[in-house]
Length: 178
Image 1 (cartoon, rainbow, N blue to C red):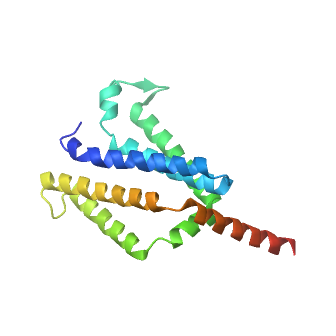
Image 2 (cartoon, one colour):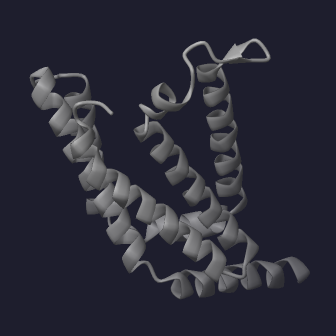
């Protein structure tokens, strides 16, 4: 584990709970578009967790690992790319639900997360921060972003958006039939 590993622990816990919450929403819903959206969200949190646990391959995979003439890094990148593409496809499939969710997020929340992402990037790349302090800034900004995600997920009302999607799909079906 890297030197900033202790600082990463709260963020990892938040990410794991976000993953569980998305899985819970996916299981609760009985509409395929909504299930696809929450599966995509769970996949995104899974990949973020994997990226945050960047020290695991060093602990679990031999440095000379090779399978079908490709290194572990190649396989990991390939699998994660497939997961990203599946998540993107699921989001495209659930685009009406995605739009309903995104348009109801306050603009201030987008601005706060964007500012935190910029601060995280600056800390990671030691821009305006000394390298040691930059790592702390990076991890704290990430943890705050994950905390915002969990707070949003926790306050999210699945039933409100399900009824919204059902009404929209019924409206579209009525207009197609006439």
